[in-house]
Amino acid sequence: MSLNVDVPAPPELEEMDPNDYEDAEVVGDTDYKREEIEQLLRDGAWEEAFTDWAARTDLDEEDFAIVTDLALLREFDFFWDSFAERVGYHAPGIPEDWKERNYHPDLDSWGSVSAINAGLTELGQTVCDVLKDEYITWETEYEAPDDLPDFD
Image (cartoon, rainbow, N blue to C red; front, side, top):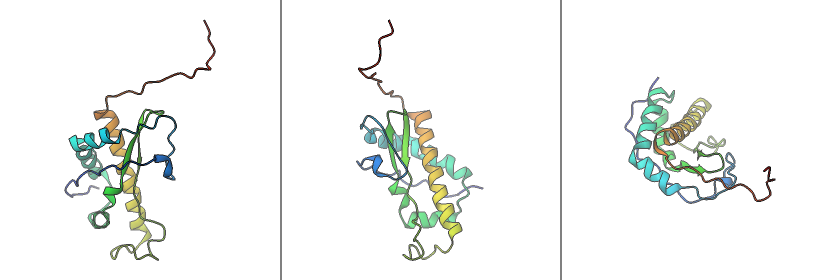
């Protein structure tokens, strides 16, 4: 299946601690390189990743319209995890209490909620993969702890 929609603008990344997310844990350096990542997204990484994701996602146009109406794509966060030398991400999603909150008038099933949340997670991972494989050229400088034994 594929999603036939225009590529939306990339998200603007805000300064925040990724450890505040329930689904992320970053150890070590706190230089998350958001400005650099945001520039890479604008330089083509977002469009490349979105196009790749849209070609294979199970999300349909109706569910993507809900994503667009709720401006969920703007809520993505991408950051550099220097310890793991990877791009980390936080994907937005529709909360579990969507029904009680009347979250969106066209949202009427757990199937749609699940498809949207899974699709956004897949998009986040695709963006991370494209950034790491095609755009990021920096390396993390590893500094060994002072208490390592000397084996000479």
